[in-house]
Image (cartoon, rainbow, N blue to C red; front, side, top):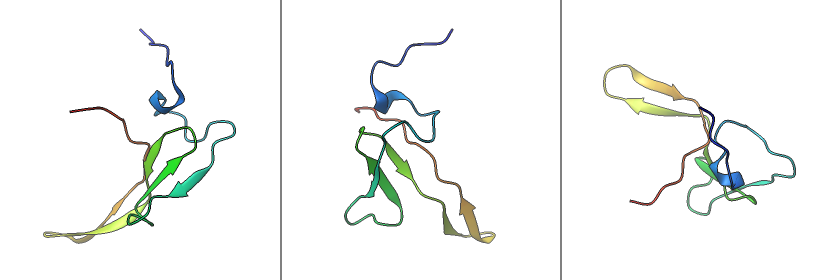
Length: 67
């Protein structure tokens, strides 16, 4: 069953929506960006790993929720 998304920030499958502009988040520049539609994404990066040295992590649109 496909659920209908009411707000643009709920759409995590589309990499770019029409009219969407991405900007860096202060203090997280190079790691995360936020769009004018309220979506948050992580950027491609390499992280240090205890067993294999460095590991590539692909960027993605993050789901938003309250805990």
